[in-house]
Image 1 (spheres, rainbow, N blue to C red):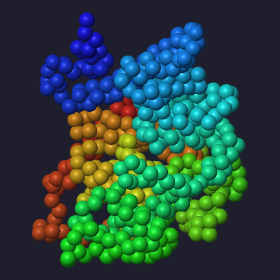
Image 2 (cartoon, rainbow, N blue to C red):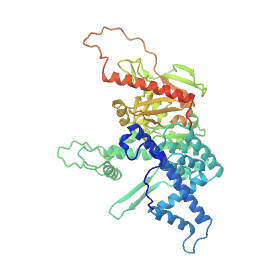
Image 3 (spheres, rainbow, N blue to C red):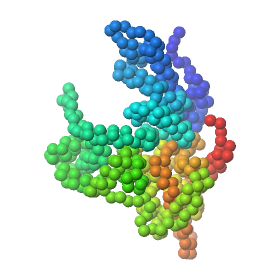
Image 4 (tube, rainbow, N blue to C red):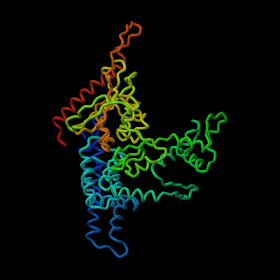
Length: 518
């Protein structure tokens, strides 16, 4: 009997006929891809389950030989069955046992397709230093609750940040002690390879890593477009030039090369004064209270680390609300939270399309990352996008320049939104969480991020930037020559997207009133 699969279970197919896949439309295949992702998670859960069972049978409930211990026997079965290395097999076994014994509730989210094996590995790695069984049980319960209750997608950086903030909340002393130990172990290490190359590694605090990496990339990018090296090769050569003070040159080989290569010392001086490391935290934490911080490009850090950063001589501390600008108004939050919300002007008076500097900074602080699902790009390196498009031809129908209608998108995501036919929406759910969704042209809905930095720093939910009411425009006579076209592509696209969003909103409100069964 053959052990190959001749068909997929119906749950994987999601309505697609495997014999005639071309007979199904794009939306159906998108649904099938989502089902397959859930199925892959279920298969990983099944493998963990079998590995744990075999461990019980061979290790706990049997006696081993004299030369080979029982655990080795067990790992050998896994590595030979899957034709993988013993290290890989040992990793599978270790994960299976850790999940069963330390994170049994989180493990069920893998079974149910909420997270993948890669994300489960992230949870394991960020909790493996917890030694207190009671704290571990509480973490297991809280992580599982967030994974099940929060709408949206989880990428590795955002899941990592979520777990890190929970770990700090439950075991802050251990986090601080681990940071001190890690800083004490900083150093430089080298390793020689057999092929005439080697590796140099520097372990240092996160902010210094960002500054050093910025200096390397700044020098590496000064070559002309005809340089034949890839980015990693240029970075390697630039790093050597910076460490040794030797010249860094373009390798295009052209006499007319226009590259302007600075001296390494000039790059270091310019980067040390220009690089900006964004750190987000609460004022109370900065003043000495327990809490956490979030470092752009790194993730969650301890309160001690935040205060160390604030004490650097080159640190600049800025509030996320405008300085010397009175709030436009104070309103009551939605009935779900009962919080008081302070509203500030979100758009520049002379140009309603442009957000104020304070509004732009706030949106980037709130998002932390690009809001495209799975994109790890920093919000501070991203564009700001009007979720509901600002309609220049008819501003009263377009989206407002407000924090609730703005989010951060990487350059690709912004261009794709602007020139493509996808539609995204941004709203708050019944619990006050900011929720984004993306809808493909064929009508398939993809959830956006499950969390923003509002979940790390709840005070951010009490701040809004809204577009102030505009004065009526000055009347003018429009002649036939300069009258705007009422039937152009942009106007039609805006009208179609408004209609689609209206249908989506109606369906969302219906689902909230009568939620579908899970």
